[in-house]
Image (cartoon, rainbow, N blue to C red; front, side):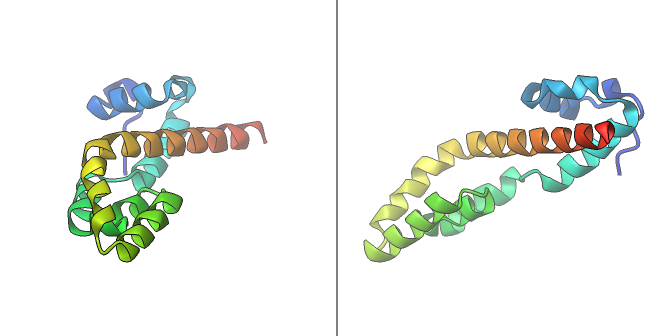
Length: 122
């Protein structure tokens, strides 16, 4: 669990979180701790995404992990029906995994902050 009371003590993680979502500055210390705990549980890990891309990139395993179900299914079916030729798309994804993770983390961050603010209003 994250025990930091002051958000300025968060270091590199805080800089990343402020980069993907500047609304964090408006949270008090209890809301910030709640936000951090939820974000750290739901964010996607780069090592896992890269490992899935290397091991099962042609089958779209990394896209399933990142929540891109439509394109993951498309990659799976194309790889099966073209005998693996469509697996070349995994090479393209190796370059884009960072962007996919950043988009996912930003989306999760916004959902968590909206949920926290909704609870604050109630």
